[in-house]
Amino acid sequence: AQSVTQLGSHVSVSEGALVLLRCNYSSSVPPYLFWYVQYPNQGLQLLLKYTSAATLVKGINGFEAEFKKSETSFHLTKPSAHMSDAAEYFCAVSSSGGYQKVTFGIGTKLQVIP
Amino acid sequence: AAGVIQSPRHLIKEKRETATLKCYPIPRHDTVYWYQQGPGQDPQFLISFYEKMQSDKGSIPDRFSAQQFSDYHSELNMSSLELGDSALYFCASSPSGGGPPSGANVLTFGAGSRLTVL
Image 1 (tube, rainbow over the protein chains, first blue to last red):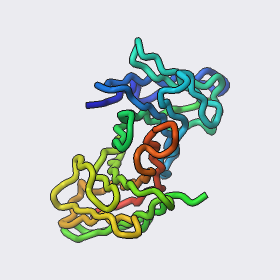
Image 2 (cartoon, rainbow over the protein chains, first blue to last red):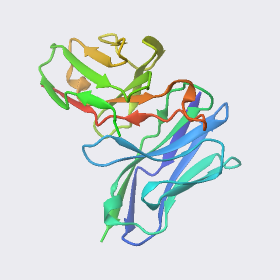
Image 3 (cartoon, chains in turn blue, orange):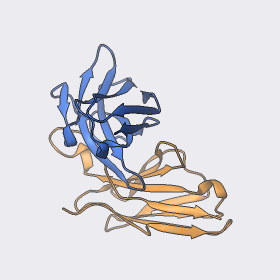
């Protein structure tokens, strides 16, 4: 069984401030971890993924996430928020090795204040 | 690059009617997943297919059925529609066996089909 917990369904940051979206995972086997972004009325776009290589993963739009096994965490960060970052962000987990479905967290809505 | 194509993008139905959603995966992707995202909710896994066989089943109602065809496209059939079926339905595809050398089962999502049941 696998799951992710996203802390905070809504996060507000000022433009130019640090973005930190929290995600903790639970998995009985080594996980693969993902962050997806969803803009209003659009599909899900992959931001970045962790697949047991480097623990610090860089994604698109300046986002990065660090896999910390000891903390079972995969928090998403961006040094400086832009207005265009306003969206909903989903953390997701799947088991490593071959076919496995992805399980999503409840999502965190990011608001960027000018 | 080709993406996952879903049709129709929007669909309005009455209660107790039937709806069919279609999904065309990325070329050479043989695994298709269906997700349902209700208003303000996270995507919930419904069902998946690998090489035209059902590979996994999630919280899909008995009123729903799906299949994958020989060209790997998939259709989600929903009957006896209820108000609560109003949602965004996502299809995603991935290559088999985890795909790229990284082994990650990276799903590529379509833009979704928005079903409204009146």
